[in-house]
Image (cartoon, rainbow, N blue to C red; front, side, top):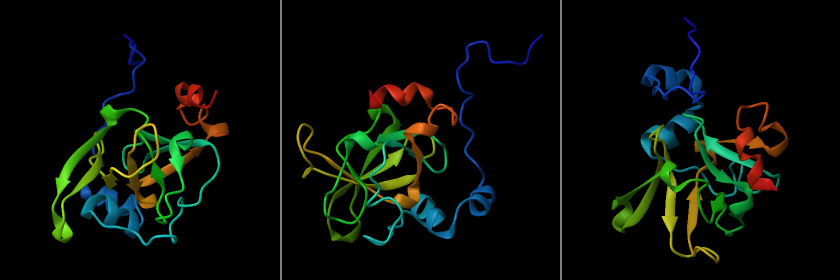
Length: 156
């Protein structure tokens, strides 16, 4: 009997142990994704990224945002008007810092990504303000090789 997955679906994500995450992630990636940290504006990897591609959760690899929905919000963090698939995002009320905000987390990885604000561009009016440290960028040309070929249609 073959051990291959007959449905051709990816196996269910198994969340790494804390020890594995500490070994695999940089200190900043761990602080942001696991301890709800925030990186510095204008001093992070993707705030000014202009190439076409897909942004995935650095922990789980789940697709989160497309460069087609990225815009310059002037805040110094990558900002997106919508996720690739709303079902991959979890929104929670965040009452830290003496205000109420909406925290954004990845569904499978449970990674802290950033926050959602109602001041984005049309058509959604939303701004997903995301920490670069929570993301891995896959350029359009590498999507197929990295196992994300189904997302090429986003760039047609």
